[in-house]
Length: 331
Image 1 (tube, helix red, strand yellow):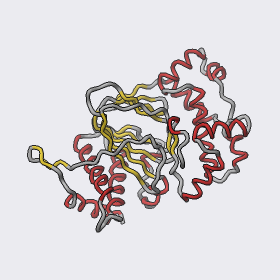
Image 2 (cartoon, helix red, strand yellow):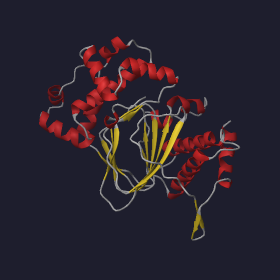
Image 3 (cartoon, rainbow, N blue to C red):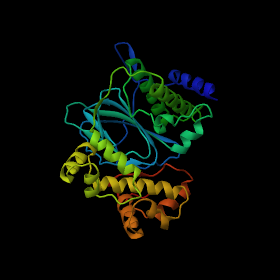
Image 4 (cartoon, helix red, strand yellow):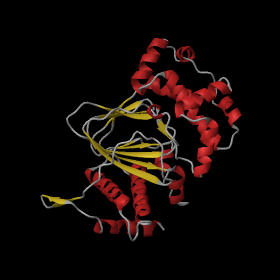
């Protein structure tokens, strides 16, 4: 099946429509998607967006219940993810799984902010995998890389696949049901190879803090327990004012809000695993059900019961995203 998929992907190059020539090189016309603050998936497989803007408003720290591939083309961006800040260069790729809080911090520049954003349903990607080839590995492996900084050859390879996949969005005709799947499989195979089999051409520029890394690890390992600023300051032998300042600097959010978001991410996972909603809060560190209910509703705009109903109706895990700016969305 994998060989057939790669073969189908290779024929895509000969069917694409091209708009103009630049110094003898074919340049594919790309449709710039209208930007939306929507952070949930409407499809059950994948969604691909190509964006190019002069001005852009930052999106607050958030997470998705699906995987994200972010291919940076141009602009001035520092990507924050789980307390680490990555200064991006053109051609960089960020891989984000369903539990990681993240945001792109956009700097001031005359350049266009240009990127590809690919959302992939977790269960759909699993369905494309085989016993020998787990395409989710680059998102879930404990040794996964968050940032891929590649050779120019690999940058061109991946961007070419993304361009072809994007062109398929509007194609209606022979092969429309097979070629997108083949291209997505090819892309994920290449991303996994680059994640685990190839050496990076340049080391990524990462701003991190050992203290904050330790604090985040501690939080993630003790979500079911009471966690306070005073307790953390005492545990790590620092003042709570210094901890508060450093945490906000490296994560882009307050410690309290980070803990709440992480607890809610865990809660959603437990709900989808079938744990009774009325007992989920006990395993996520919420003092009582009313606090859990209120935090869930404030964060996602729906109740835990409505969330379960939505996910059951879609018969898929990975279709609901979260972002503070998007409360009130109809899921």
